[in-house]
Length: 605
Image 1 (spheres, rainbow, N blue to C red):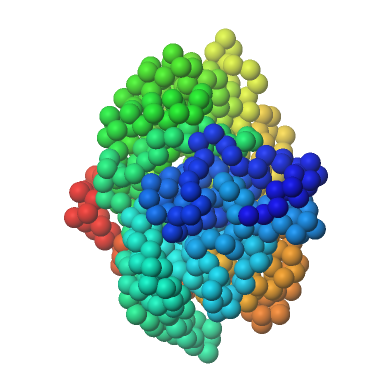
Image 2: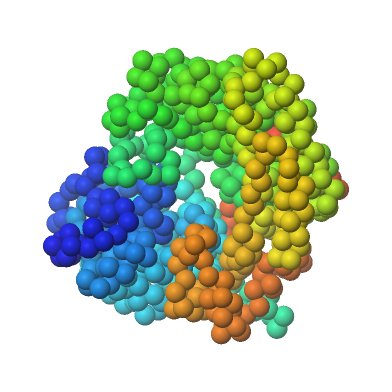
């Protein structure tokens, strides 16, 4: 246990000390003498990590075990790290203030490529060797989350990866660990046995070789390919009946109700839409029961309905109406995240405005129908204008619009289409009678840069280079300048570039991450803390050209660094979708008929 007296001395010296004290309402308190101590580690600040639903589910589920005590830690911000190092305080858990290095297993969530150096920073702060090969008796370091579908850039640092949804496989791993610990733990023997569990990948047991041109030649090892794990029945799946109420305001400071997993839309840029297949819904009564329990246990006055596309839930209208009606007396209002405009209903817009005055968020992604067809967005301009019209008629005067730039086949005419579409949305508002307009119009346009991701039809496509993305951003800024009521913002291109490098990279990038961390890199998704020079120097030191990973169009027969991982959707389906994208052809929602993506017979379609 750390010296809490020293902790008390440094907390007044840092921003938001509530991040580091734990003991929140709803946190789990158990005996520290249990056979297994598990530490959930989130490589970002408390406010971000506490908003992550998957971590919340696994934390409470793991604590249901009688032999395991699961605790939490988050990445201390640099000001806290400085004080911890000065005071000799290592990374610790929030529940019992136990040093991270004293745990049996540390499990990291990898939800974004730009968190990788923060993982290394946390290991460093814990006094744990960064390289897996240097760790003999220290904790098992495991990782799960979206980024594990290409685990290779972190292969040098992580003992084992969980591919897919963790509710079942995590318990299987803990059962195996308990068995090995009773016999006298041999780390290598445990990892070898763990690799036989479906959904578990142990990189040290896999060898990768390369061609002279730098492409992958062969991936060899036992128990390959590693197939993702997923929960088949969401109604019987574990879901916590209470939440931890945070000490400080967090990013998503509300009850989160997960209504289904997966997506049938097939947007060709969207990794989540492919790796989280098949679609599995919770039934209406399950959701209502969970909603009432969570509100009663937390005291929140807002509830977010969580999924990849909440408007596609088969009972979304009835669910929304029942939540609004049944939670009204408790002064609780439900909200949806970013919406598909083609599933947005007038009645729902009005009910939401009556419950809580707010804006709405839509994601057209592209400004022209041609480009929306290329990416298989399957929405029309008519859909978009009708949806925002419903929002304005309900009393909303603020809308946020998500677009992407740098999409495959994009031209400057497509950028003009984006500007024209925003102009038409303005017109929809100003065509309303004055008495129906609710204040000044605000349209927040956000343009992120396309990043080609594994397990999408665009995984073979190159990213626009930095110069071209900058040119497109300048072009749009100029076009939107002077458009009253419109605010334009875009993502930083160096971060998007590195995201593409690590998303499509191989295990040779481990050296880059190590050198970047040694230079000081961490919190790379935070613009104020990101330093491109450290990465530039790291690539030079490692002798690696990052453009090889981000800007190169991949051959269709090239062995990808992640080809030993199987997300369930077949390569043949991805290639078929790529060909249709090149031809500007859309593919319908698979709810209209099975498209044979690889899950036929599993999703029930």
